[in-house]
Amino acid sequence: MLKFIKGNLENIDNVQIYPMISLLIFFFFFVALFYWVITAKKDHITEVSNIPLEDDTKYQNDKIL
Image 1 (cartoon, rainbow, N blue to C red):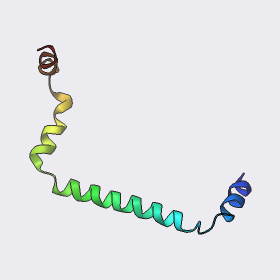
Image 2: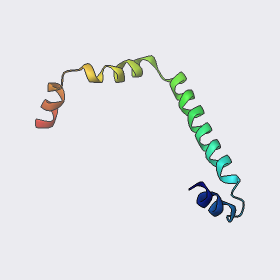
Image 3: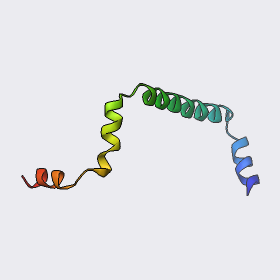
């Protein structure tokens, strides 16, 4: 199975750049996510973390009206 994949990849020009591009995309994504988590306001995080614990009748009444 690996021979088929390896054989196809050897025929592509400059194939060695694709793993580097994917690594950089994931690296920058997680760096940005880490930065967002560090700089997020405590009030926002507390509000979002309490959403599953809130009563649903508030949202159901808003939809009916």
